[in-house]
Structure formats: structure tokens, C-alpha cells
Length: 328
Image (cartoon, rainbow, N blue to C red; front, side, top):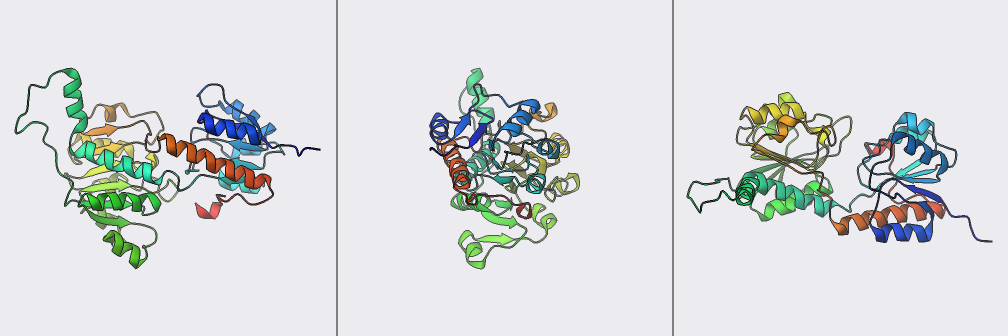
């Protein structure tokens, strides 16, 4: 008699190759259109599924967790960040949570460098000029930006992505500085030619570029708050490809408008897709719609990790990418 397959509900459209493989392995319910589930749809899915596969657009809080059915035993998140999932409540209900770490490291680091170059070299302004047909030829003083070679880069969060950004910045001739909960091993520091700052205040006051590469946790919420943003040099640039909640967005907007901060490149925002209209109007800001991880290869690898986590769980073992409250 065939073994009963796990009931899996996927909350968003995934690459065809991932959905097809899931269909082969599990009793999977796929999404027809690429829109987020409503809260009611999420609640229904959590009542009937053995495994839920959510994304960052699904907020799974303690209230939703309390209404989960007895069948739900695994939340296999499609993505590395899990701040949209109440991991503690899940654990209390005996529901495992897994994620997809390490897959998007290189893609996100690429985007951090792209934003850095876009802001400092005024690429959007040049693009706009060309698209509008207003360019009248080369001029010695037109669209002057600043070079990043020789500049000091301060990285907030020196995990996988932070180190990948450091390696790229090294190749551009930048001086690497970082602030992290724990100092890197001496051999890693030496390889990256990186300087560690125990004091974040001291570091940000001296940097030309700040790159945010730490996760959003209670301890990193508004890590760049109004007071700390005031410490930045007026020539400094802020890059964020991590989580919007790490920056006090209103304070950043005020600093940019007042000329106290030279520019910003943001791929993530404090209120998700609700962008501060004043931020959108600023000429010294480059805004992207959370594209840091948006490569075909990255999305497929994320899906493969989700499948491995579910398959391992189905085989009676702990998912290799299980997330525990103590890890957050």
C-alpha cells in the first residue's frame, strides 16, 4: 500500500521547475495567481496542511499559529529571513520552522554593489536624461559623481552576505570596516583586510559608505536610528539590501532632504511596499522593489532547499535548515 504523501500548501507562485518537482513528491496545493494569500486564506491553509510553504509576504503571527490545525507540523519558508514568522509560537505548538540560508548570498552582495555604484555615480540621473532625450552631449561638469575606490566601507552585519560584499568592495579598492555581534576570526579579518569596530557609533561617524547586511531582529530594529544617522558624514551614502526595519526611514528621509546624508540606495523598506512618498521624490536616492535576491538561479535554489527540508522532515529527520528561537 503506498505511503500517504504530505499535504503541502504553497502561498505564492514559484518557478515552474520547483512547483513541478513538488507536485511529483507531495500532495501539493499550488497558487493560481501570483498574489499574496489573505489572512483568512492563510488561516485555512494552516488548518488543513501538514506543511506550509510561505514567503516574506505572509505574516504568520501568534494568533494565526494558535488557529493552526493539528496536522501542521512544518513551516518551510521560501526565503532566508523569518522575521515574518513567530518562531517562538511555532515551537510552543510543536511546529518546526525551516528557511533557505546561504542561497542568495552572492546575488544580494551583487545588488549591494550595484546600488553603491548607482548612487555614487548617478546612474539613474544619466538614464533618465537619456530616456527623456534631453542629453546634449558630453560636458566636463555634467553628472559628476564620486569614485568608490579608496573610500571606507562600513558593513553592519558581517555574516555570509556582509563578507561577500566585503570581497567585492575589496576588488574595487575600498577599505573594509565592520561592526558585528562577534568579531571575525583573525584569518578571515586578514583575508578581507577588515577592521572591526566594537562601537557602531564610532564606526558610522567615519565611513564614506554604510552597507546594511544584518537581519531584522528585536536588537537590530532601528539600529540606524535618528541619533546614529546624525553621526554620519554629510558625504556618506547608505545602502540597504537587508531589512527595511533596521533603519529609521523617516529619520533617513529627513537627513537626505536636509543634505546631512549624501545619498541612499534602498532595496527594502520599513513598511514593506508602502514607500514614504517624500523618499520617492528625492534625487539622491535609488529605490528598488526588493530585487536583491531576484535571479532565476537563486529562486530555483531556494525552491530546492525548501524541497530538501520537506523531504527530510517526511523521512522522519530534522530539516537541515531548521530555525530555532535561540538563533534569532
